[in-house]
Image 1 (cartoon, rainbow, N blue to C red):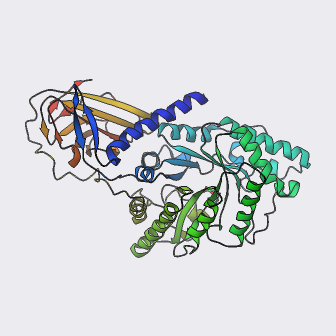
Image 2 (image 1 turned 135 degrees about the horizontal axis):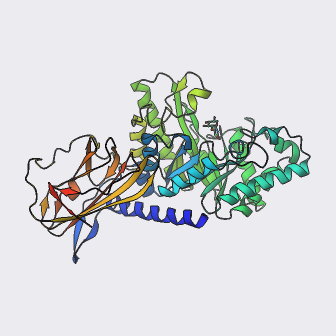
Image 3 (image 1 turned 120 degrees about the vertical axis):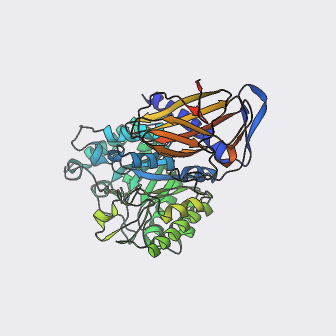
Length: 485
Ligand code: XIL
C-alpha cells in the first residue's frame, strides 16, 4: 500500500511538472507529433496558480485540508489545483486518530494522504504530541510515567510509522510554551519535564527517518519572550544532536497587526540551519468585511509571502483553510472571520491576488469569460483531419484532472476544441486553453501562446472538472470530429 501511494505521487508530480514546463519557462519547445525535427514554440507565460508560482520560487504553498469537505467540488478543485502541500486540519490529531485506547480511526487521514498523492502534493503531518485535542484516556488516565512513556512512544511509532515515506514534514510537537516562554503545563510535561520534547523527536525520527521534523507554535511570529524561548530550545536540541529539522510559525494574525520583526525572527531560525515554515497563516478581521479592509488584508498577506521569500530557509507557507466558509476563525473568535484567500462562495479575494503576485504569478484567463480572440463559431472548420487523446489523469469522488492532446493535419490560426462532460458537470480550472461550459458541452479555445499550430502540430491543454466520471468523449476541432488516439 505504501509503495503504491508513493508511485502515485511520483506520477502525479511528473504530470504537474509537464504542465509547469509549458506555463513557467521563458521559451519552451515541444516536439511536434510525426516530425522529430520540428517544434512548437510556446511563448512565455506567468504561472497562474499559487502552486506553480510558488514552485518557481522553490517554495510550497499549502492549505489546511478538511477531508470531510472533499465531496464539495469547488473546495476540492481549489485545494487540489492551487496548493502544493496539504496539512491535516484535524484528521491526524491524536483525538481524531485514537479516540479510545487501541481503536484507530484512519479513514480521514488516509483520505488526505490519497488526495495529496492524486494531486502531486506534499503532506504536512499535524501533529504527534500536543496538549490539545488529546483523547480523554491519555489526558485523564492517571498513568505512571513509565506507562505514559510507552503510550507516547507507541503513538508516535504507530502514526508516523503508518505514513512513513508519505509525509514530508511532521509537527512532532505543537504549542509547548506559555506566552512568557516557560513550558506549558501538560500531562507530558508533568510526567517527564522538558525531556519529553527531545524524546518525541527521537521517536518520530526512528519511525520515519525521511520526514523533516518540526516544532510548531503560535504567537512566536515576532521576536518576543515566547519566540526567544523557542530559539533557546531548538538551539539546545541541535547542540544535543536531537533530530529537529524545522520550526513552524502558526501566524494566526489579526488585520493590521503584522509583527514588525516577522522577517528578522524567521531569519534567526533559518540562520541556525533550520527549515522554517509559516504553518497556519490566516489574517482575521471583524465581520462583516469591507473592500478597504480586504485590500489591507491583501497587503498583509503580501508581506508575509515577501518575508518568507526573503529568508532562504523558509520553504513554504500554509494558509489555514481554503475559504472563509471553512475557516476555524468564526467558531473560535466570535465576530471575527474573513481570514482566508477565498470568500464564502469560493471566489478568490484580493488576498489571493496578492499572494499570487507576491509569488511572481499572474491570474490566468477567467474560465467563464469568453476569449475575445475566439475564432468565429460559424466558421465551417478545418477540412483536414485531426486526432485527439482524452486522458483522465486522476479522478476522485467529486472531481478529476484531464489532459487533452489534439493533433491537426492542417495549419491552424486559432482553434476551438469541443467535447462533452456528463450533464451538469463543469470545468472548474484549466490550463493552456480558455474554457466555457454549457450544459455539459465544453468549448476549449486557444490562448495567445498556442493560437498558431503548424500542419501536423499538436496542442495540449488540461482542466479540472467537478465530476469524477468521464465517458471518453469525441473531441471536435473547429467543428470537425477528431479520430480517437
Ligand atoms: C484548529 C482547527 O482548525 C479546528 O477545526 C479545530 O476545531 C481546532 O483546531 N493551532 C493549531 C491547529 O495547531 O491545530 C488548530 O486547528 C488551530 C490553532
